[in-house]
Structure formats: C-alpha cells, structure tokens
Length: 107
Image (cartoon, rainbow, N blue to C red; front, side):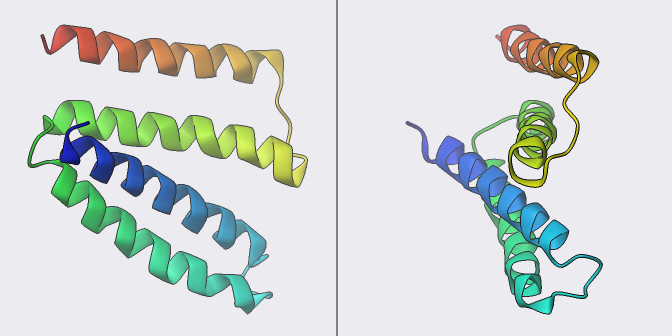
C-alpha cells in the first residue's frame, strides 16, 4: 500500500477519535476527553497533509470527509444511541457511491 494511503487512513482515524472525544466532553463539562480532541484534530490535519503528496486533493478530501461523515454517523448510533433511520442509511449509500465515482473518474 502506498504511504499516502496510510497517511489518509491515519487522518481519518485521528479525526474520528477526536470527534468522538469531543462528543464525550459533553459541552466541555467532562474535560478528561478534551485531550483526545486537542491531539486528534491537529494529528488528522498533519496526516492529511502528508497524504496529499501521492493522492489528488479532490479524491483525498472526498474520501476523508465522506468516511468521516459515515464513520461518525455509524459510531454515533452505536456508541451514543443517536438515530440511524432508513433515510440516513440511504444517504450514507449515496456518499459511498460518490467516493467510488470520484475514484473511477480519476482514472
């Protein structure tokens, strides 16, 4: 696997962790999770920057944002009991089809 893809996967993972930690702060009331966000978001941007050395920015950003949206939606439902309706699932499928389309279009 190309190193750029490893950096992109790392960026996505860091962003997901940071976002979940931010949710757990409960409006900054529970500050023990704040460190996860303070470290996670900058780490995500750094990894994303390195990923751009080998991946087109349009493709990398689409993948990063789409997997972030899909991941936080699914993890929010699994970990925090947030709603996950059929409509949300259909929208997630549309996002995933968009990622596939961008990857096919770049070739």
